[in-house]
Each structure stands twice: as C-alpha cells, then as structure tokens.
Image (cartoon, rainbow, N blue to C red):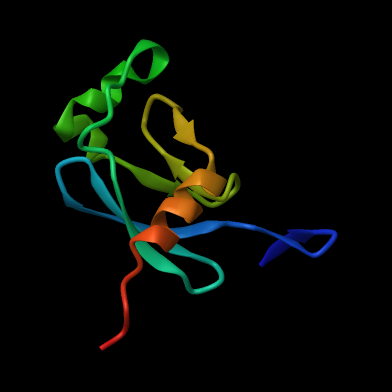
Length: 92
C-alpha cells in the first residue's frame, strides 16, 4: 500500500464494468466497492466516456494506480476510493 507520511494513497488493482457506467473497483488495501457514473455528464476531454461501449473499455493502469481508457484519459484514484468506500461490497 502506498503512503506518504502515514497517509494512505489508494491504488486501484482491479476493475470490472458491472453495468453501463458503473465500475466495481478493488484497491490494494482490500477495499472493494462500486462507483456509479451513470448520471455523469462527460464533457471536454472526457466526452468519449459518455459512450457506454467506450466506457466499458476501462483498464487498470498499474503504473498510475488508477483506471484508464484507450485514449489515455484516467481518473484520480482518491475520489474513486472515497466513492467505493461509500458503496462497499461485503464478503458473504
């Protein structure tokens, strides 16, 4: 797990598209949660992410520790982590 001065810096280690514009993310501390972008209005450089088929081409960028798309766009892992923690998956 990455940290600076004891502060956890989230690193995405797994991603799955569970439905249009909804990602299930796994972080290196074991946190798993869903992040729903279905109400997001993608504009400017991120406009391509508005297309569900293109959005579904998401991958983990292991070097950056976040998710990325073929055009090189990525999302900061910190807000993804906070959203995933707000919608966690519990082991059953």
